[in-house]
Length: 361
Image (cartoon, rainbow, N blue to C red; front, side):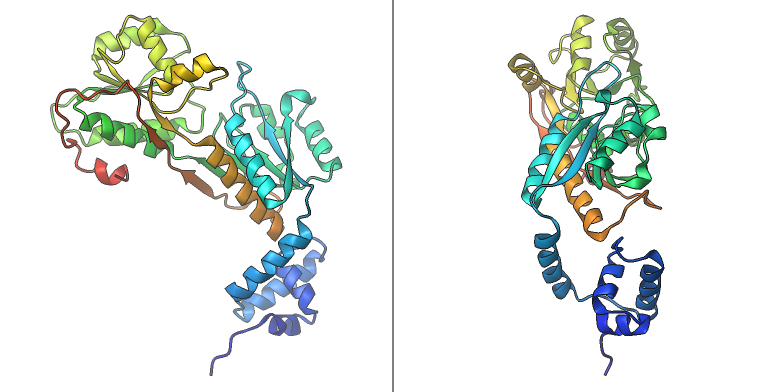
């Protein structure tokens, strides 16, 4: 009979106690690295696999003992170059999940510290091992922060990608969903308008998804080029509209619709509009403005919760430092119906046969 290899077998092979073997398999830093490597090598040699049921029970016990109320994790934010704070929803979601898991979450604004090294020292001096990095908007932070000294997860996408596991919106899915829905409602000249921020790490996903969608249009259908503009540049946008005559615009956010209206275009009477993400609203007036638009909601609080969950796993398994192969978790956006994408006559089946599958419909 083929018996299952147990933790006791691994401990005997490595000439150590069961507790030392268990901690070594969890990369616990209290065990010397040479011992951890020896135990892990023995586990591989014996083809050891932990019993899932027993591992779950042990994890529940370990959670109670090793994550006391008050254990702190850090959520680090860097503002947009225009001074805009972009991480409120993600921060709130992470804080709620931290409380549910028994952690205390502390917000660190990079703008309050001299440099990335100074911020890292403050976090370390407070005994904090785990960090969540919000939208990273600064190159100097990317290159000068000591990522390898923490357990870390990146939350959402800014101008730069930290060398960490990442939880982010599925921007490709958002564009494909918006394109498919506009096509289904009768729009035939669909364009994509973005701000001129090609360094943003989500820019490629949006543009690639749009090019993928238009590649399935039948011959003779308009394939509009992507428009890029600076914030507030209504004239460039008006010129693009006059030249390419879109009947629907997929815009980065509601500010694109505002620029369309500034250039004299009636939205949605003349051009339908979908905001690929919600605009940050600081007051009731801006919230009402956002509510007007058909939008893809990136669910920032869900992103924050998922980032905290991933950080919790790293802390429990003592996976500190830069991962050799970072993993990305993508969260699909939610469709929010508004007034800016009315049907153009009778709704029809999309011309692009591959889009229903690609958009997850």
